[in-house]
Image (cartoon, rainbow, N blue to C red; front, side):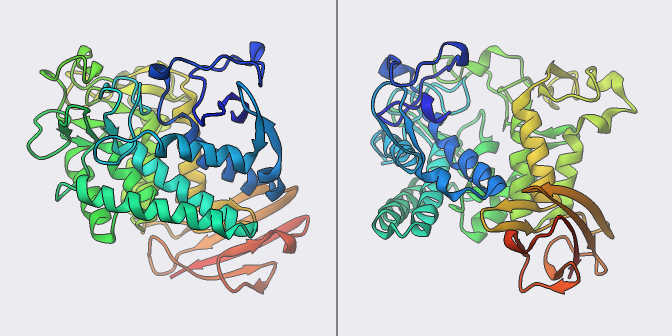
Length: 411
C-alpha cells in the first residue's frame, strides 16, 4: 500500500502486485485521483503496529511509487498534505474522482465531508505517533490543521440533526433537510463519531437520526431517500433501482462503521442489533430472503425501498468481511491491540452476562473472561492479569507470559 503512494501524497488508483515497480510508476492524470485512497493508511498502519508492537515500522524507509523515498511517517505526512492542498471554496477536502463512493461526482473542487472526517482522524493519529517519537513540532503542525478543519466542519457541515455529505463545486449542498434525495448519508454520520469531529451532542443526535432514517431489519442503508431525479453527472447511483447498492441500498462494507460508532458512544444494545441485522449467519433460518451463501459477506443487500428487501448480491466481498470481523472483535468484544499492549474495552448488549474469548497476541495466548453482573453495556470496573489487578484496562505486552488469564468485571 505504501509503495503505491506517489510522491505528491496521492495514490495509483489500481495497484497490480504482479507488475508493480515502486520508484518507476507513472502518476495518473490529475482527474483520476481518489481523495480517500491514502487516508486509509491511518487505519491500516496503526493496526499493523498495534498487532506487532513494532513502533520502529514508522521509521522504515520505503520508496514512493513514482520517485523518491521516505520513512513511513513521511508517507503519512504526504497523505495528509495531499488532502490539505486540495480543498474547495469552504476549505474542506475535495472529493476528486471519488471519495470511497464510486458513484459520487461533485466536480473536481467539490468537497466531501467523509474525506474531511478521514482527514481529521489522520491528523489525530499523526499527532499521537510523532509525539511518541518526540517530534513535537510535527504534532503541533497536525493539531493546528485539525483545529482549523474542526472550525470549517462546524461552520459548514452540521444541519441540526445530522451532518451533510458533500458540497458540489457549483455550491450545491447535499444532505440538508431541504435536499429531497439522499438526504441522510450513513458515512458522514458514523465517521463524525469515529473521527471525534462531532461534539457529544452532535454524536448522539446524528446517530439517533441514523436509527430513525437508515436502520432496517437487514442493516443500515447507505443513504435515504433514494436517488431518482438527481442528475447522473452528480450521483451515478441513480442508474440503480431504489434500494440497491449506493442508491439507498444496504452497502455491507459500511455496516461495521455503524457498529463502531455506536460502541464508541457506549450503546452496546444498538451496536449488536446493527451487527446482527447484517450478519450472514443470522439468515440461516430464512435463506429464501437472503438468497446467498450463509457463510460469506456480500456487497449489497436490498433495502426497504426495494420490492425484495433482504436479498443480498455479489458474494465474497472482502471489504465487508474485514470490517465485520474488525468491528465485532475489537469493538463489541473490545479486544483491541495497541502498541503498548492489549486494550480490553467491551461494548456488549446489556442482556449479556458476559463472554469468554481466546486471542493470540504477539506469540502469547490470552484467555479473557468478561462478567457483567449489573447489566451494563460498557465500562471496565476491574481487570486482573494472571490474578494480579491492573490499574486500567490495558494489558501491558511486557507483562504477558506464554499463557495468560485476564478476568474483567463490567460495572
